[in-house]
Image 1 (cartoon, rainbow, N blue to C red):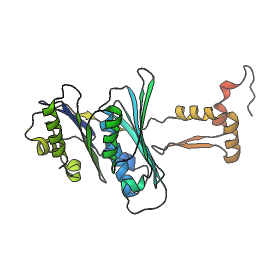
Image 2 (cartoon, rainbow, N blue to C red; image 1 turned 135 degrees about the vertical axis):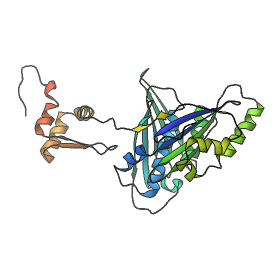
Image 3 (tube, rainbow, N blue to C red; image 1 turned 45 degrees about the vertical axis):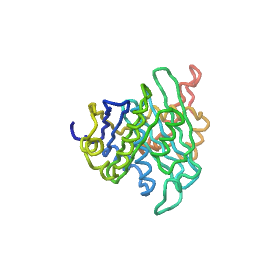
Length: 293
């Protein structure tokens, strides 16, 4: 086994039982998200855990497109959103209100709900599952999502630090489950529960797996790279502005002298002056009409 590479996902299987696992470790991607906004520590912790969990979730689903995990509530933390493609390219953000020194997940996310969306480009289909946030942590809430929506026993362990985030997922596969498999599942989950946050963040995957499952026969697959990249573009912003209509955009130009759009994910700004704004709607003019207001 090679040491755990940064910004990577590792998959493994237990050879003697239908249980699979995933390990994710992110540092450069995590820091890229933190560079965009100055998140309070409790918000940063939950954002990081959700980031690791979304990569783990994406690795369990077969799709070509994008998966999004969005948590909404009416507490101080109003929203967390992480998007991840099937190629494990991700971006994310959080929104909050008020000031707070420290708070638990339940205190921050009052009356919360978790929305899991999958956009599959291959068949142009969109799947969405919504479950209430009843767990005391992101890991517990996602475990309940799997129990309700996927009907696959799944457990997660997540850790978020200043420089890195990490996660471990165990999932019992549906095939050929017998009584002995139940005992095996309970045992490996109990062993995984002994992992400490600092171990998950700092140790390479070989040490983590040996530390937890040294008596089991594991098959470890090659690492999969994970990266941060925002897919915003001027073309996407132009299409969004066009959808608002010419009158709306012209009103904004008259009031502000132009239009400035900031991407919430990467905080990149796109500026449109009067000429740029009128150019958005030139194709809508009747043929032979050169008029520009």
